[in-house]
Amino acid sequence: MRSGFGRWVLQHRGARIGLIAGLLPLPLTGVLSAAIVVAVAVAKGWREAVFDAVAAMAVLGIVTAIAGGMWSQIAISGASTWSVAILLGTLTGVYGSLTLALQVLLVIGLVSLVVFSLVVGDTIGFWEGVLSNFAQQMSELGMQFSEPDALLQLAPTMSGLVGASVISSSMIALIIGAWWASGSGGPAFRNMFVQIRLGYVLGAVAVLAGIGTLFLPGEAAGNALLLLGVGFVFQGLAVVHWLVSARGLPWVALVPVYLPFFMGASISVMVLFLLASVGFADNWYNLRRAGSNVR
Image 1 (cartoon, rainbow, N blue to C red):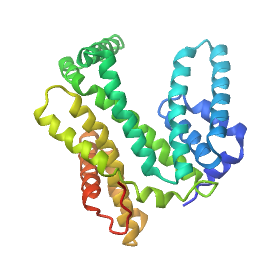
Image 2 (image 1 turned 90 degrees about the horizontal axis):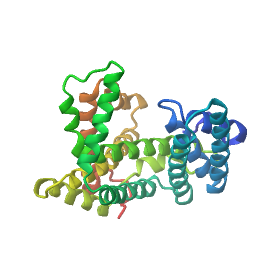
Image 3 (image 1 turned 45 degrees about the horizontal axis):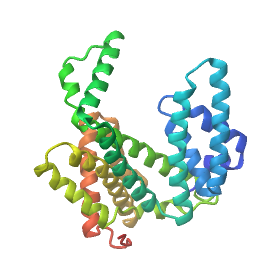
Image 4 (image 1 turned 90 degrees about the vertical axis):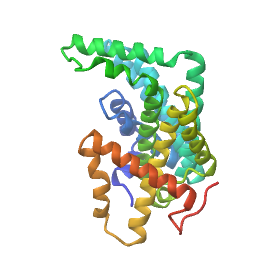
């Protein structure tokens, strides 16, 4: 499946630089900004992607200076978002694999958890302070939490939740960008997507993390499991897409898989758990008989 927008944006540098810059600061569209950078890295290489990102940063700098905005925040956001996008897009373009990009992303996430814990020390206290400030800011805006203490109970898992959110948005940007690049210099998207597999090493780490949540003190094992769970969700989606394709079913068969994400948080969490379970099972028992093993 090829994307007309992908072909267009890859052929018009000025327009894509404007889109990369313009979509980054807007609510919910930062992932699309990263996806365009991914598409450039996949189809045209990392040098083109770096040039576009630097040019977009210059555009944002000029606009921010004129508007009198917070340049430092935008610069940090752009540098972190686009550097990850360039890395993932380059890996996908060079090796023709979404699996490798996801594996590298998860390893970076796990290492970041360890570094964050070592630097901060008391991670629970750190997140309690962040959540308290957030609750206070919401209160000043007239939004009161019915149970403020319940918000603070998220502190032990906040490192994992934030990390899982970053990995999710990065993977979504990678998938969209790889799709846009497919047929315009990038490898075939569908084949890469249905072959996503974390492999035995990350699978073993997930098993150890799961055991650690039962027997080890602290929150480190649970946070690591949250990060790896995101990876298994995408593997579970790959299994579902492979099954639909292998059975010759129409694309509408995928609607029941994605529709629950628009039906509330509780249903979404349940579907995410089911997809992660499917991905975890596939990692060890190869539910896709025609797939290739990744070790």
